[in-house]
Image (cartoon, rainbow, N blue to C red):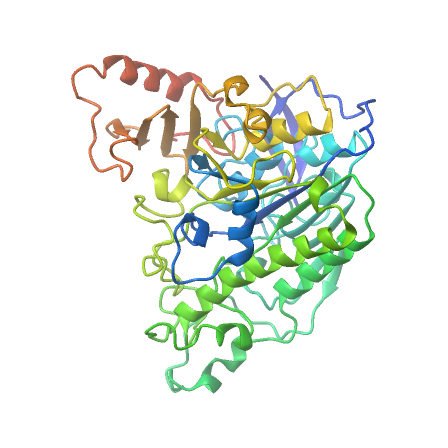
Length: 489
């Protein structure tokens, strides 16, 4: 991998160090008749244990559970990063955060995030190059309006949703984007972070009416995806990046009412960010239910069109469940199970995510896999399925053999690597997990097989010398320095 300099168009001119790869988008191979469709469904801040198939008892998720019973449930799959933008970058470009262009959330004004440059080739571009129709819906977070990182410039034929992560803090926003056109919505502008006014009664539902608009983004987005599915010819790649259940706790009242009375509730007044919510536990449960419902709506159309059996569906989340903020009581729901920490952390609670793949006739129904994989592996997997060859400049390993039940021919990672917030590094080496926080932070090593909660640091245990040496080598040489996200500087 090499660096080259260029100017990014991210709503303003920015100098950046970017990777230069020998990648050919003009691939001549066309997919054969019957090539599978691909749907990648990405939840936002959903915990691994928010779903029934992973053990959730209080929130009903029949569609996700059915997907697992129809396909394969992964027990050792990791997000691309512990926060949104770099995780999505990793997913779409096939690189871990030591090589990816975007390694943390990086907001720009007035709307958008640091943009993927032209040099970064996405899986959508690869699939489009071999004849796939491509569309993305939901939350983008990888480019501002009129930038190189806009979805339509990153391989997607059609786009609808939020370009900006900050805009997605509200489910009743002033606008969404359809391709490069701003779609104005019938919602009054609401600051996404505010407290309930002191003169209002927190136990009166009317006190919260100002936080509910007319156009709920979640419904608009799923409707557009449904329209696309009904009209598109095969083969297609649909990237559905729902903004749910990311905070704030906003969802139509009738959906909150589905869970009202199921939990003991204390009104959330907005004192820890985002918007007040009278029934915060019911609202969070309703948001997970909405994720599940939306998945079911897409599957229903596949079955109506008779193409469900020829469609690979992947379901996962961009990172672990959120910490104690915005009224989301993820500890109550055990959203991260017993895993250590939350979103924003390189411990298991921030990186271990649900991962389910279904493809009738190819993936054995009700199967389970402990294959070690991460979001960046989707790139190589989708390329192998579509017949794209000669991949270079990526960290991705295809898990297609594992999906087919051919574990003996499944290539394995030497290691998985992450860096975050310019001060954290983590690596998984088989059953070992190493973490370093801060330039002078002590090295931590955990035996995930015997200590999945990462409670006992065994870095100095006798016999660990070779592991320590290997970890330090990866931390130093398994990455390339980034101008935007310098490590320990």
